[in-house]
Amino acid sequence: MISTGNDIVALKAINVARTKQQNFYSKIITETEKALYDEQFSDRLPFEQFVWLAWSVKESVFKYLQRVNPNLVFSPSKIKLAKLVAPVAGNASNFEGRDFNSETVYRGVFDISPHTFYSRTIITDDFIFSVVNHTNNFEKVMWGIKKIESPDADDQSKAVRLFALTMLNTFFPNAELEIDKNKHSCPIILKDEIEIPVPISLTHHDHWVGYSFQL
Amino acid sequence: MTREETLNELKKVIAPYTVNKEMLAGINDQTDLIRDLKINSANLVDIIIDAEAKYDIEIDYDSADRMTNVGSCLDVITEKINQR
Image (tube, rainbow over all chains, first blue to last red; front, side, top):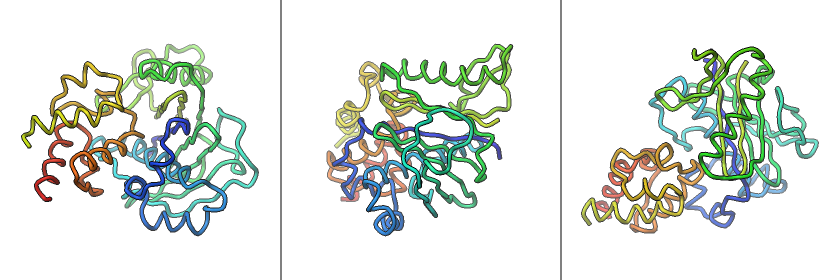
């Protein structure tokens, strides 16, 4: 099962007070995940960031699986955080590339029966960005994050496609590439108008866009 | 509350989270919250919480998962109102 999934949350666009309300966060994280936060992360990560980290990974898992199973329903409570390891060397400063520097990202393991997913999450003052994979090896995963001028939905859509295509063109230098959506609304890459087996995932929120694709 | 009355109230719940006001005015059961109304997925929980407050209901995990288009939102809200 080769796919990819990512998600970005713009931290300036979230409602911090609301996120901390039990009736809100309980729609995203389970009691077990709340307990894990209280035990292991409450001294290093603001609670609202933990909630949105969980959201971004769970949304990424959904996007990953939806490509394989288009009828899948997004159900945050059924995607369960099994393990989360905090970065040891401060914030990430690189916002585009292949694989991740494991010292500057949160590394997670999430289960949704019968699957296990591995996550990488970058947290800055501006955003939380996650990518998931079916193995704990991200060497074939390309990803990128970019700030854009306009948060208008059409502008976000155009900007993230242009951003991803710029990177994709380095791998297919002489090809006419295009990003479209299949009949299930999953993004696909067309090369000379024919879909190629390179799964891609796009995300945008407020002034931030991101992509991941699997080589 | 009739389905049409519930729909009119639901429009008010959704309004803060979409800039697609023309589409919002003409929504029907098939209107998809993300694809058609361009609502960011991060705001779906806001809509559920606002609906809980607006209709004085509690929406459980499984019901919340179903709320992807206008028709399923109305079904869930009607179910929960009837269970009060």
